[in-house]
Amino acid sequence: MTTSQEDLLPATRRALLHRIAVAQAEGRAPSLVAAVVRDGRAVWHGARTSVDGHGPDASVQYRIGSITKTFTAVLVLRLRDEGVLDLSDPLERHLPGTGVGEATIAGLLAHSGGLAAESPAPWWERTPGSLRPELADVLGGRPLLHPVGRRHHYSNPGYALLGALVEKLRGAPWEEVLRREVLEPLGLDATTVRPRAPHAGGWAVHPWADVMLAEPAEDLGRMAAAGQLWSTTGDLARFAVFLMRGDDKVLGAAGVAEMRCPAAPLEAQDLVDGSAYGLGLQVMSRHGRLLVGHSGSLPGFLANLTVGVEDDVAAVVLANCTFGPALSAVGADLVRIVAEAEPRIPEPWRPLPAAATSELPLTGPWYWGTQVFVLRLTPGGGVLLEPLSGGGRRSRFRANGDGTWTGLEGYYAGELLRAVRRSDGTVSHLDLGSFVFTRRPYDAADPVPGGVDPEGWRGLGQE
Image (tube, rainbow, N blue to C red; front, side):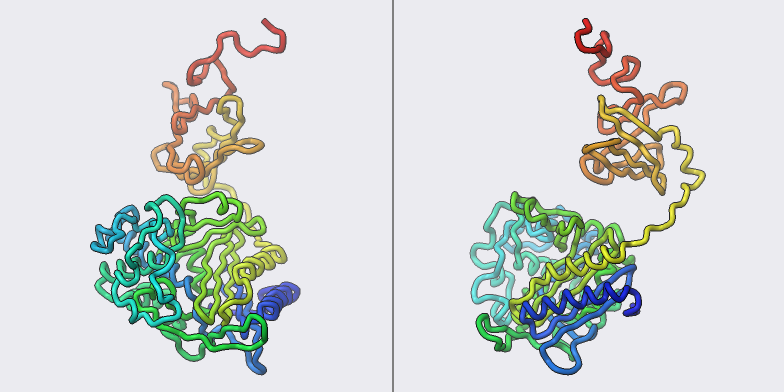
């Protein structure tokens, strides 16, 4: 991945630098380093530090905490794609004897398995993993706090279980599988389980005085799959590209798209906050944009990776303090700054290939009752069905190759759309999961479910 400071306009670069400078100063972070990705490569790098001289660059490691969970999720989805497991499988089928085996693999990925947020005391982030040598030590005597699958409850032990699952099914340590299956294929050479020079030191900043205290950097043992990794803005920028586009050497575009979809039950406050959780990824609505990614923290470090998929812009922000700048807000702002200052240039409009015109008679207005919908052809033989105006259900549909289409989103996801033809081959109506779309609203000649009043349309006072 190449980095060119000239890829962004000077005013944009200054706005990005200003945002991280404010974050480092007001958040009192010993150092803060950031990168922005656009069009599949890093286009900006910035750093602020309290130390005179050379600041951290894209090659300096920071601990990334729970961003590690996203890497672990990729390993699990690889197992799914290979047919080794199904996400709906209960954990007990593959990793028996944990005491929480009724939780599904998907539930653990989405933090809806009902598990406790933390392992039993002493706090796992500030103590050596050797204190918790077995999964039973990680889970404790009361590992389930909620009914399985009923609510989103963030669980670090849940990802420790997923790490153990990977080890069991691969027959190798989690860190070895991660290096072989993800880090090396993606070229993430500076992402490691243990710190490697050059790396930042972790610090706690006193809440009432500008003084610092060194934080421990423990090996997390069984909890490693939940938060062990060290990385750089350079490597995480590459990982952000992977999360946007996929890579067939690791996980294809469909797999990373699945990770980005909300997969955990939402609560009322989640709707207010505009937040959800997918499969190893946080999903957020910020500034009118859909963002995905993950935040992370361990004593002495904060981390954030934010991806604006529609804008094709991502941001990475790392700092070496226990508490300080709100990096999730910083990451969202970096994406917004670039997306608003330099909007994505759309691809040129091009006509559909000649083969697509065979479905041209299906285009145009259709009526579901009295609501007007429009059907449009899309590239690849698909169609889009959406209300002509106002709100309502809309969906893109994928062509199945047999004259039918399958819904891809919203209410119609997975539903079958087909054109029902008369004996002479002309189209009578569209059938979508038993909904009938006709060319005229409530015409007696059309197959309207329940029939049509024989009196027909009438005006006010008409008998």
